[in-house]
Length: 140
Image 1 (cartoon, helix red, strand yellow):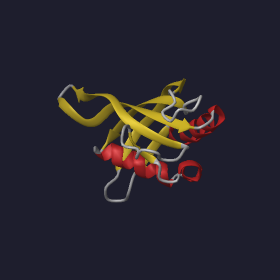
Image 2: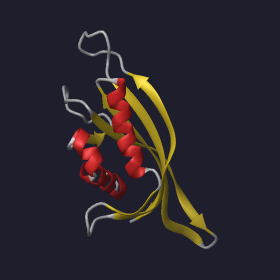
Image 3: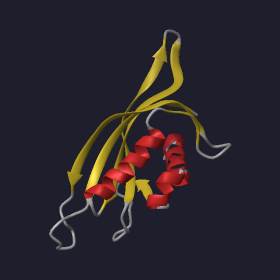
Image 4: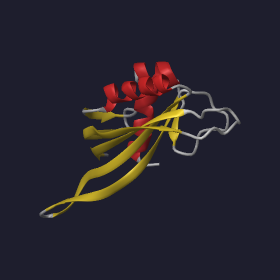
């Protein structure tokens, strides 16, 4: 797990509006325990590339992250997505625990779309999801 991923998780579960909805249910994609309650969210790194300047490599990381906001209802997924958007869109500054944080130069919501998963438990409807993609520039 990268410094940014640790900082992202710390920031999300300690942001008042997000934590009020999901408590600590924010994990890397695919790592939610079977049967975990909703609403919840997960994240994954979509892409990254090194940044360079005319004298060589830079310490600045440029990456794209996907955050999935899951809920039993469409309104629940929208509400959670709005809490993430309000906190992370246009985020700048220190993120994470003091001493092990990273500095975000810019974090911007690039796209957002809706989805509904297939039911896994035999019910008529699966959970709803809002998928957000963020562009992030950060340094350790």
